[in-house]
Length: 118
Image (cartoon, rainbow, N blue to C red; front, side):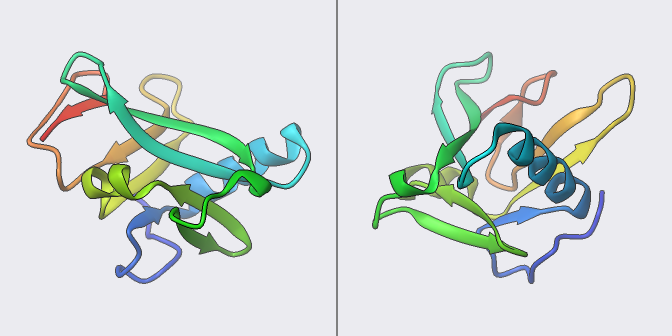
């Protein structure tokens, strides 16, 4: 796994490769966008990760905002209870590539790595 771009006190960690990938995707989308990360009920383990770009004007005052070299990650406080300490990494491997979530709060993770249980 790649080193995080910010000190460990950040609630959501982002590797250099993940930062490069989200910045690239952001440029393709255009506009002033941040990355919203959260959880929702569902998935094979009970809770699923969610991630999508969002216009920065939609960020709520109650949201936690993490700045990585000018790129913002936003997470609602309820989701952050389940995600605090999450490491978001990215691999461009042909098999098993894509975004990977390493969540220290997960008691169980499904085989695909996109859902978890606490």
